[in-house]
View (cartoon, rainbow, N blue to C red):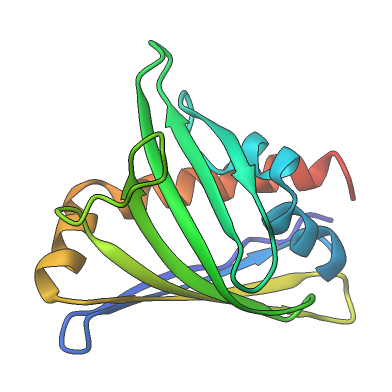
Length: 167
């Protein structure tokens, strides 16, 4: 029986943070792999009709994920995620930034620190808790104005669809 997915999206302007809690009807190992394997990330990360193309990924502490969000017309918006700390099947953290195709960060756009924590339950559901920390309130508000909440929710729904085919 399909469970209703939890989706909490909390904006804390005072502390310049966004906290997202999202549950998935799939075991921890499968959800962890979906967040860390580039072939799978490319299937769900971008909100439709956009898609994700990974240029390179080195999933280790000190490694990075360089990818583009690609529009149906082929327009590319490049991003870079620098991995800071990884605890297998428990958490990973890092810094996310907009960049160019050569992985040079765009300092005029928000740079966001991410902490993703994963926890499984005995009934094969997984909770992912994501904390995004911003350098300024302006950066937080800018990301929200770009449609982050709606786009991220759509990407997570794509992940639900992927997980249904694998569980």
